[in-house]
Amino acid sequence: MIAVEGLYRSFGAQPVLRGIDLTVAAGEIMVVIGRSGGGKSVLLKHLVGLLRPDTGRVLVDGQDITHLGNRDLDRVRARYGVVFQGGALFDSMSVYDNVAFPLREKVKVPAAEARRRVEEKLAQVGLAGMGHKNPAEISGGMRKRVAIARALVTEPQVVFFDEPTTGLDPILVNTIHHLIRELHAKFRFTAVMVSHELPEIFEIADRVAMLHEGRIVETGAPAAIQASTNPVVRQFIRGDVEGALPAPQ
Amino acid sequence: MSGQAAPGRQPLVVRGFGSLGELVLDGLAALGRFGGFFILAVRFLFTPPVKLGRLSERIHFIGYKSLTIVILTGAFTGMVLALQLFLTLTRFGSEAFVGPALALALIRELGPVLCALIVTGRAGSALTAEIGIMRISEQIDALTVMALSPYRYLVVPSIVAGVLTFPLMVSLFDVVGIYGGYLVAVKLLGMSAGTYFGEMQTFVDWSDIATGLWKAFSFGIIVTWVCTYKGFYCGHGAEGVARATTQAVVLSSILILMWDYFLGTVLP
Image (cartoon, rainbow over all chains, first blue to last red; front, side, top):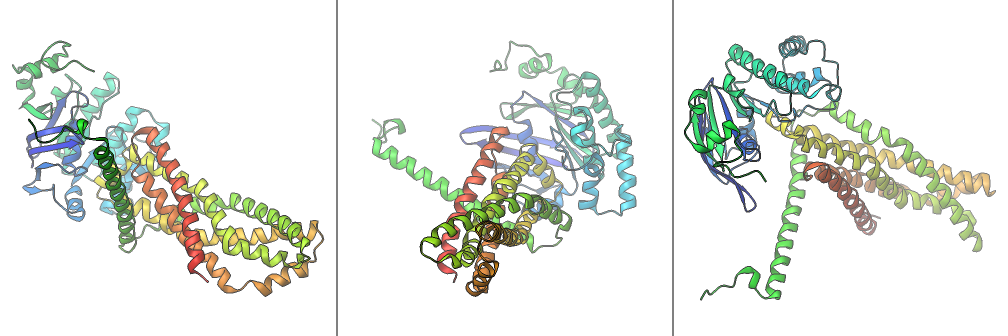
């Protein structure tokens, strides 16, 4: 479904991705873990075509998207849903209009059908009856759930989650993880999630990839990652201060 | 021994030329991006679908919400102009020309320039800040990954709204300014209304009005182009948005004055 080959990207003199190799199978939930500032979001932006690599390729169903023009890239993106770290809700619109926006503008479904789907999605994320609110009037957890509803309302084949639970309390973290798992079971989308919510992500991931110093150092099922003998992976999972990972600056 | 000196050991003159070269290249790259931004906006302007809802919202934001400040500024500009012209022309016994002098100054020059500068401060800065906040909060990225062009939703409606509203706002500014001048010259300083308006009709012709409207039209493009561009490519965080907003207002103001001089030399 998605294959990343030798992805290299630097910003000025600072290399962030140093040769990423990763494959995501259709229908699986792949969670990319790694230190903050390690390039996880940069990797995600390459997968959705917001950034172009210095070298390397991103293949979606065998098609290299790294050199596509905007029009062709838009055709690929039409199958995507993206949940941004901060939600990226349009603050000039209500919650309802935010969720309805891709239906009205992208899929162009009839108004009655759009209303049904928006109300259904808001109910699925536990926000029935909150459509009239403005994004500024709702909590961080609610905003994340609205963002999930907006990303899923067009029933995309691939959904990207950029730290969907960062900054939320443990109950909300589990609520959102369960919600993602539930929606995944129902719609069978392929998901790529960037997160450092450990150990919670092991509950929802089909596979986990550890990003360290711009490379994927280990990929495997949650159980295999948890039993990893790689010192970097072990230290990150345990949250040890001392070890193979450089000390926080 | 190495044949090449390390950058830190290069002579001062070489380093100076290096820095100058980098500066020139950065400037040219920014200029290219600025031009490319406008070309893309024009391309989307002629590619359906046109977002009429967004356009009417932008007209409301740039035009309607600027009306109060345009009327106030127009009135006081006309009033102070009438006062100064009256006091000056009286010395030469030519106070009959207060009306046409005021009208010509307003219609050809002051109306378009002052109105554009004021709308830049009110609507242009807000436009940059709004788009800048959308950039840093990933709302522009959200539009992009939805396969919806931010140019179509944010840039094109703003530029079209600028083109449509600036001539109307400038016309209003001119009319209010002329009546502000009437209040001072006729009601306060005792000129006859017939002289004030009569001489105006004699000396102001359609080419003067066309000059003012051409200026307004082009200022509408300049202000919305600069302000949307600066918001679109703002830096990181609140500081980036603040810097972009300041740059948008400063650059728009400079370009308005430069373009005004240029048009003044080529238009009749």
